[in-house]
Length: 393
Image 1: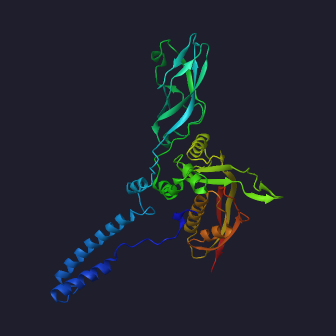
Image 2: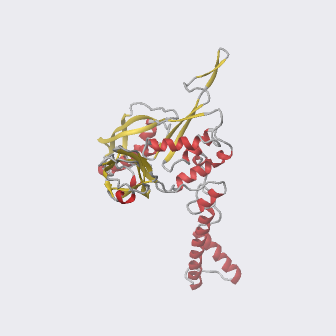
Image 3: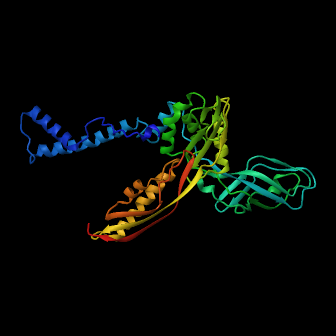
């Protein structure tokens, strides 16, 4: 739980009740003029107009003041708050993949594949970043490539879908290298939009943890969240030490000094590229304590399904009640899937399904509460909500 999970009331920096503002202005008018101001008077109409403008101004002042609080701030003010503690918003990143080039005829002499060779898939283009030497007799060559467009647009192209050569490679090399075929061998991944306010806000709250090197749970979490925009949560699991027969032993199977990180991304389990980025961020010399061994794994996926039968009030609109119940189930699912280690509690789900028109809920799945440890990710495999009948109530 972070500081943002605390239930603090919204601060009131000034009185914003329009009626209170109007009463205050009427009282001030009567005090200055010595006259009673009645609703039908022309002066009262003018006071009402001024009070309305005053109320709008006070709302604007309230909003401007709230922007100085991390909990309520938004771009661009949130970016300035981040600057105060050395945290900046993560920029959009481009998707990456591996391209396999096939050469026909096979080059007879040493040559190279230049940087900047463009290959297209659909509406996006990928380019090689560095020049690669090619030995005589080489028929295929695997080269890393990055999407020319940043963001998620370049993600999700399966192997073989990026295959249209745009660049004229033969004109870029002195030995007339001929590319007869090219295609991606890995699914394109790693592209992300610029960090949104909610993700950035959480990192700002965690930022004081970075003032020392990692070691604490919060410090590792801050550096892991800073590794990639798509990382929305991370479980930090270390060894649990106990003394047995006079010796220190691990009770959870993790050796002393080992820190296991389990990052969760917006779409679920992380790609190899995201895990590599998290490891690099948390394993840096100025981040990792000398005695720590950092390892990065997928979260442990725990599947569950939601199956429920609703009994409705006889007067309820069945279609509307079913629609609202499904919306509630989806919201419940999304809340759980957005974090690691959240338990699936039957009573909470039953309460969530008590929407408009629902008299009773018979929950058949999950059959029991699903209690999860920090590194486990609850994944809903399906939602099936039906109407069992009606009751007079």
